[in-house]
Amino acid sequence: MIAGTCLLFVSAFARPNVDVSSDLMEQGWEHITFDDKHPNRFASCGDGCVEVRTDDSVSMIGKEFATDPLKKPVLSWEWRIENRVAISDLSVKGEDDRAVALYVTFPYDPQTATFFEKMMRPLVEMARGVNAPSRALSYVWGGFGNTGDMIESPFFGAVNAMIICRNAEAPVGEWLSEKFDVIADHKRAFGSIPVKVAHILIAADSDDTGGMNRASVRKIMFRAR
Picture (tube, rainbow, N blue to C red):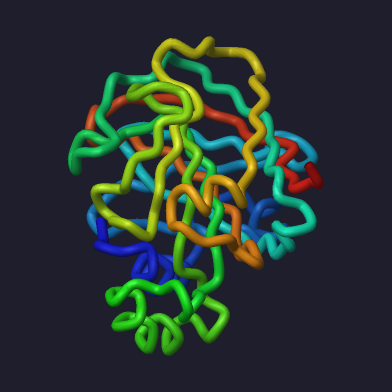
């Protein structure tokens, strides 16, 4: 994979959509793949529902999801998985598989940007435009950690904070509801309050354990407290 959320959007969003159903593409979802990695398969599973099948593979889909978190800071959704998650360690490269994850990205903020973000920003804007995102929160269902734990991504570093929603003890085969305050999580992760959300991404990762799973995510929305 590539070292930095900024670079992820440079290289990945520019690639053609493969293994993504046409109806998802029509809804604005774009496929994000990684060099030398087999991609997941994404399909619609109903109105506002996305299914991801992962089989020794890793990739994401993303779409613009502009919203004002100051007015609607609470992110909620429902998800389920078909098989038990493999035991993994999200903090270690090569051991960081997860059954499914929901990412929230935020626009670049020069006032709070790190040195690395500022250094890479010209390249990012050249490839993706001035509105390309920078930091991300990822809400993860994987075989690691305790609910509520926050972990720095081993690939993306300080610009991507991972929050454990569900672990290997969570039930499978049934819909589970999630609700998180993105303002509180952003402040906890990055020490600042976001003024805008840029994208939502859905991912699964099974290339390290060689596992297989099917996850579905639906009813993604932001609302007031």
